[in-house]
Length: 270
Image (cartoon, rainbow, N blue to C red; front, side):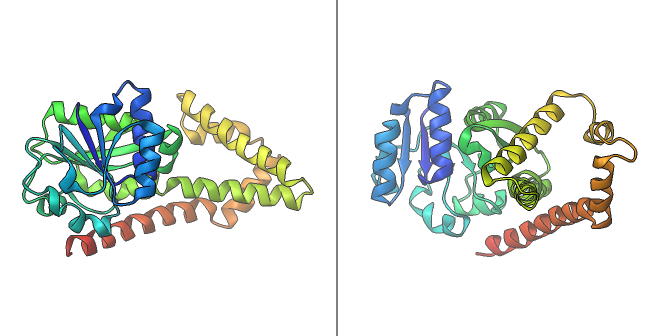
């Protein structure tokens, strides 16, 4: 599979690194990026083919990954309009819906919209993907293979839920980092060193997440098993309930989803 990346930023780096580990061939990967520093880094690190502009690219290939900022997308894809052939286009630009992308690409319809998250940078991401109806099963599998190079994938057939994917998993790492931040602050307030607080907080979150992933029980049941009546955990959870921690998290996710819809409308009107 011949693959071209439009944009050579962090997520492109993560995808390329993961793909090479999964058996993709560096010579089959092209990257278009106007920044000489980005091109030099990609070429030196992965030995992929780098181009300063789309006009210099011999051919797009079988799959095109759109990895530029959504606000820059319309202008960035202009040189590629009419040159895509049968290539499947994979967009990792947040907020840009499929119909807007198709319009930017001159009516090209073989497009998959994706929402990865930042743990993809260490190969532990989760990506939601949604295709246009014209995307074949083989094209879905090609897109899936690329995104699985940096983690797991979830296919969403209703594009209206993609803002929800962004709110839950795209923005989700920030919620977890906030929780870790709070645990570390509490540890500091209790007299632990920063190193001790960091280890206690991060490894607790890692271990709990691993347990939840391996257990068939819902998170609510796992929580109840840790909570002895009248014990320390019950005391902590009661205070958190009084302060509306769970409700606040849910409300925050809903706010993220609503903001995603607003940004999508602004980008679509461009």
